[in-house]
Length: 250
Ligand code: G3P
Image 1 (tube, protein in one colour):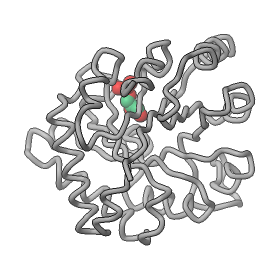
Image 2: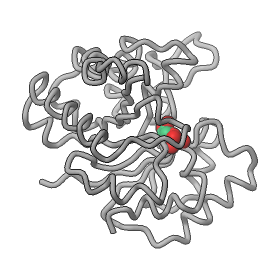
Image 3: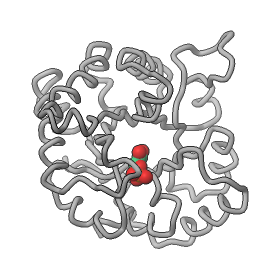
Image 4: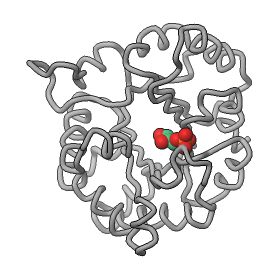
């Protein structure tokens, strides 16, 4: 079965105002969107419920993070079951900003992934190398290690709830998009790793999406690569061009 194209918008800590948020939703709600693409938007947690209420029903909403526990004395955290209770189907885990700025290790990301799966959330699991690691020829090994931590805690049936996002750190928010050959190579490596570490069936069915300076101008070429199953978009997801990225395959 062909993998369904997936486009996520990671709003990060944006938009800054209620007006901006409403303008963005208006654009999406009025757009002609390719019905064969799965579309998810991830606003800051404060806006999850209000956004879910006003956005069209064929666009799903994702949290940008969650904790490993379901309740308790964890000030500032949101739990997987709370997200499910609020009707939020997806969560982004392991984004490089969380790994770098908030010191999340691959082990913690793996535990969060486990907890999110147990709560029946779907996960956009982010991995990716730094520029230094790429220049040292370590891309595949770094990404494998990040994935391995999660693979160790998952069973084969869990992968139907997982989308892997390959986001090279050097391409995030820099305007330096990976070439389609670089993206394809990294995605193919992830797929062959999944075939070995989990199963050929999981490797074949798991969506691997690319993130890092995706724009309306570069998305079409990237989308022609056989192992690029969609995008996780940051900056451009806050602009009308997000619609063109959703429609990259159209
Ligand atoms: O999660 C998406 C992301 O990190 C890429 O951001 O702004 O480079 O599209 P951007």
